[in-house]
Image 1 (cartoon, rainbow, N blue to C red):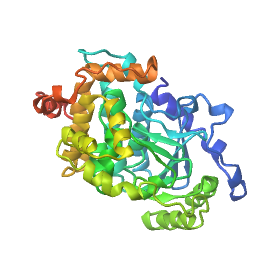
Image 2 (cartoon, rainbow, N blue to C red):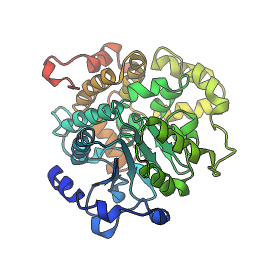
Image 3 (cartoon, one colour):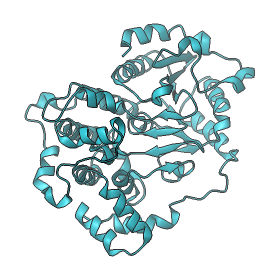
Length: 391
């Protein structure tokens, strides 16, 4: 991984490369130039506006530890140097950020041992909290794949702009993990039980659905993003109101998916009722008692997930309803570090991302074999207070 100091020093030379005049707006692209292709994250400054470019196209802009640390330090710098607006985007046309680099975490550990990459989650959650508490506007252009860690560096900001190419998902139950990066906080605050449904099933939201669900604050045609960015950068004294005005202006003139309605509109009552059970077992029973084809498909989906993860995610979403972002992130770190010592995370990553046989051997393999007391253990405070997330 590229060192943080190296990243920051080289980024200082990029402002001239990335600067543009109004007439060049159409040539602003979400891709890296040849001269900067080796850098994982690129920072630019235009007056009072700072721009973050995630620059790992081959990895779908997945974030690693050096990027997390670098971004945290840059945001600290920008909050003290007169920066009044931050824009975060991904390079290339495929992804804003497909998540954290879980394969690297998988390679760094094994069940029963402390994972050397556990510190990644600690630093990632600190960054998530920093974004969620920024006093200046933070605009995430979530064009393309936005999953896991990519959600964490976008959804807690004041503004999230989706396009017709946006694909949102939190697929952690499929790899034996929890819905982290503040998922405990923002998912319970989506309408009804939609957040719980998305967290348990890993189901995707695409295009304007991301805005309808409340994950994005605005929807803008992808072709208009360079012009939107130009107008934001042109603000002399940006604040929440002026940024919101520009985003609303571009949203109103968006033509792509103009007449599209929320694809889950007719399923919201079903989700609220079926996923309103007080336990995972209740939800499974509700699905089995329902005769619809969608219930059968949902049962099939849940059967592929880690039973331990399903129970943990159900618990975290319930607890998160009454917690603030900091409390949710502290809770998630406890669970994450303990999951890194168990079988299912390594088995899930192996089956999905390494061997790709899609045949994980979950331990335990059934919900009924996991008592609530076992789930309690994941959420318990650390015996050493120094291990807790410090925010």
